[in-house]
Length: 251
Image (cartoon, rainbow, N blue to C red; front, side, top):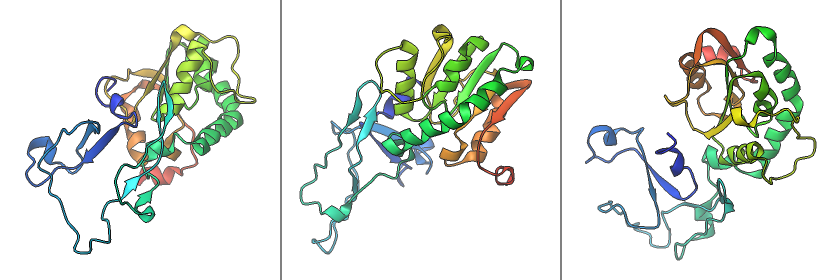
């Protein structure tokens, strides 16, 4: 949700996943996720474990820098005293990984290699002039190119860095220049909307055609595929671009 989940994915929140033995209700679920800012002491009563071998620090911390939409990258300095280098690791969080330069370059390469074919398909006359949703919009090239062909265009991605770039494209504000990554002059900026989501929430409107290009970078492709039935109008079109075999999704 824009006013609940999304603000927590800004690189400045910590996530508690799963409840403790004293939790109740939804807080007891091992799938529960609760975010909090780490600049104040919000929680108390944690159980602390003290190692028998005081020379070994049980804590493992992440030093990965975080991308905050509208601000860019911010460093994530380690503030624990006496922490050894082997306890400092890179984050395995897929969202943070998608903010890094390698992921940015991969998205540019994908768009340059495939966007022309995808756009040509989306512009077929039988697709009509309805609502278009792109899941995994990346840097927004496809959304911009077809914005004049649909009544509404919604681009969704879980990467804050990608969405931040899309917002700058829509506003025609200064942004990182990418060789060969240009859009036509016929961009309907008033029809474009870009949002950062980590999942398909209920606020995503039903559409006439949905394009999915993020299955290769999500943890559960089958779940995303099943969710498409909730956002595509009956009898309308879903286009999936992926290297994942259909048999894998069926399983």
